[in-house]
Length: 348
Image 1 (cartoon, rainbow, N blue to C red):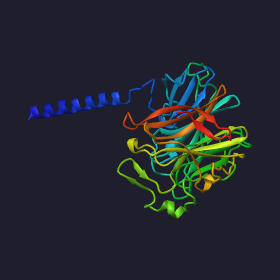
Image 2 (image 1 turned 90 degrees about the vertical axis):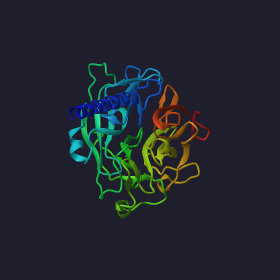
Image 3 (image 1 turned 180 degrees about the horizontal axis):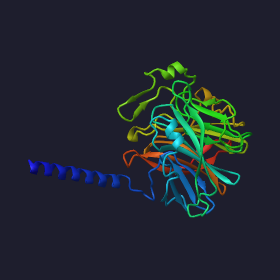
Image 4 (image 1 turned 90 degrees about the horizontal axis):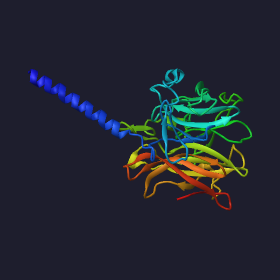
């Protein structure tokens, strides 16, 4: 009997050690081709490029050339308590940050949620520098910005992005449900001053609260696959160039590895508030969107993008589900141009 018991203990220990070894191998940081989800980027005071992404405490990595990356310490050591108290099931795995500088501070918006539910919240943290080596480096959480409530709101408070150079301070955000939202912020960059307005949908009509609350419209299959109805749209990001505002969004499904169907579409407007129209003149609020990049021979899907101009060159930044790595989400950076009519093109 003792032999059997000892064998069982050694077997469990072996399984545990093997599992740890597999996890270490599985999550090994590849400095030339890093795993990442929902990346946003900024160039810091030290000249390095910093990518912030979905992860425990918000993932951070840096690079001198956007090619070789170094893993940095997460933004938060532990989950903001207000978020744990406010969002049922949230334990610190923070989604889809957004980084931008205003005045003498960096503003890092982030979202707290659980998969497949719209009981979510967006918060914001500030820092005077992005350089972890600076004596002034310290992220200070400023608390909640936007909250959505299950069975009360027809939008989801995740995937925030502050709009650039707009006529007022506008935050765009949202996923699925009734699509992409904008809301005005006060000068503190955290207090809402208007009610949300929908500026983009995957489909050509608004979904009612009763439809969205119907258990057949939003169901979770198995442990991690969600079927969230018709309006599969998320991850807004707005850029400003030559008097045009460009709204980039992701259509269809992320987070499924080989079965991911993510694609990036966009429209443009002379006003940050929209309407955003595609090349054919279709309003994104009614299902419009010009295809930009998506599934191809190399990637199962490409989406949740951001875009930046550095030294006169625009860059498209997103994650892509790599075919060669069985659908793992990898950092995807490509040069971005505009044609003679001002429409976006991505370097192959």
